[in-house]
Image (cartoon, rainbow, N blue to C red; front, side, top):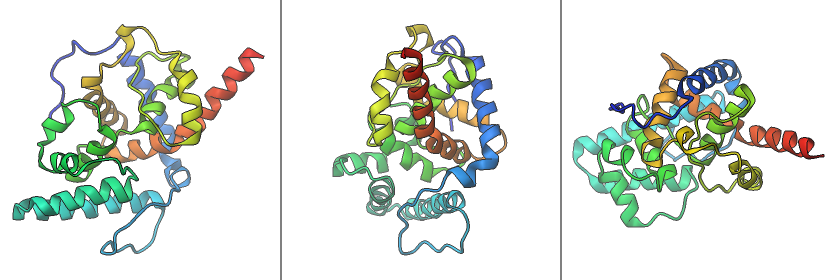
Length: 239
């Protein structure tokens, strides 16, 4: 992955955010097999010998990566489109992408996707995550919420605000609107065109020598609880 080369877009509070994220990931990593217990789609050709859901998710991403590499070596765009569609739609549950968008996500370069508009990031970041699991991870509504909410828990406020995304999760859907009211001033906000790159820089820092999908799974899994905790604290504060 090509890192961002400019520091002009770094918001104030970046250093404190990195420290908070790393501390949070370090604390939650031993619990990952407990907190990441989601059921998800697996294709018929995926062979699984058993283990935790977190381990299964990592193995599934590697499975799709091997299929992607084989399709790329064969120069088969239709195979890459099918792989991308299955991972976005069947695994990810995102069903609103047109065939044109799926084809674009399959054809575009890594940099073209990662440096492009944030629109569709929950879809195209899934494609990046199977192209190169060591370099890319998924950025979706849960991840975005957790990046912000963990700062409230650890630092008392949000020093670095990541763009929130629309969500189908009932808890996040209920909490995100009031939560967005605490969005800090512009100098503390990540600009949308830099959000994915900054997310990956932060995640890479947080996991150290580990794979970014460890950090991603943690952020995904804890989002509903962080939302409930924030809602509870703020409801209590108003009473």
